[in-house]
Image 1 (cartoon, rainbow, N blue to C red):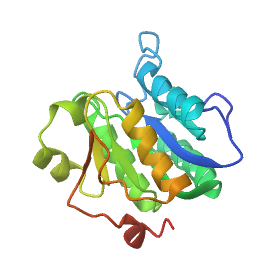
Image 2 (cartoon, helix red, strand yellow):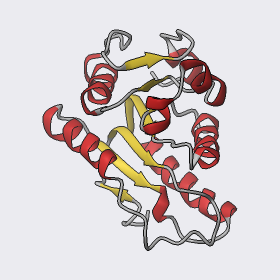
Image 3 (cartoon, rainbow, N blue to C red):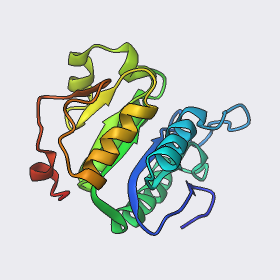
Length: 187
């Protein structure tokens, strides 16, 4: 696993936050791209205050090659994490209206790999529920606005306490599916 793609690395993972690339184009300039500060804040709160193992996969830093090669690297990273995922593991995506196409590609990859995911970030905060559900029908749910506490509670309830996650402030379940484990076999 390339060291610069997944930080921090754990022996076991409770969750993975995925920074969606601006696009899958191989000519995307990386000089002006800022690090995923928001995801870093969410991971820091989850790890430091909730004693979780949450890491970040920064897909914006994938090798600047053809789309298929970039996706292959992302898939290999996800498979490595899946091997070490705790029961109740969940991934988080941060789509925006700018990188929506790349977000859908990653969401489809997560679904293909049987990895449950939740959405956050600008798209989740600014879009209505029907739009989110139509574009990401396999998502467990979405978190609006600041996600540090809501995401941490979601992960802690799923991995540490094995409690329901429907009553977390800021978390909106898509389609009312309160038992995603049956669909994805995550427990």
